Structures are given as structure tokens and as C-alpha cells.
Length: 94
Image (cartoon, rainbow, N blue to C red; front, side, top):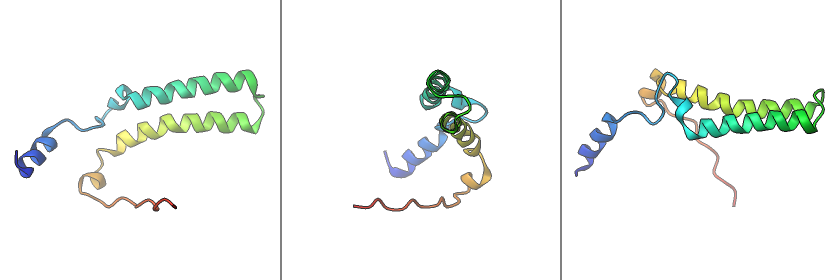
């Protein structure tokens, strides 16, 4: 199969992260929700509710879930489709 044919066949496939709530079926989203639920239960049991540590841990777990949801919504934006350049990550230090 020629490169151009493969490229067309890949483009015709369903997107990796479907729009409109399809992210809920992703294993990463399901695991993030599980981590959030367990973090809340752990913090409620072992860390004082008024503690800053409690708030930070719960917020970090919530952010993981929210980032997956927002990434799914961004997937269909015009900037993404027209090939807008994404910022590069710094090279790892050796």
C-alpha cells in the first residue's frame, strides 16, 4: 500500500478521541476517575479536611479528569484541524 493510500485510509478513520463525550469511554479517563474517587476517600479518611494537603491532593486528582475532558473538546477545534503548531517540550537533560 502506497504512503498516500495509507494516509487517506487513516484520515477516513474515526478520530482517536471522539467529540461530544466520547472521552468517557477512554480507559485513561476511567482510570483518572478511579484515581480521583480513591484520592477523595483517602484524603477524607487520613488527612484533615481543613488541611492544605487535602485540598491540593483532591484538586490534582480532579485536574487529571478535567484535562482529559478538555483535551477531547479541543480535538475538534479549527486551530487543531488546520495544523497550528503546538509548543515544543524541552529536551530531557542527560
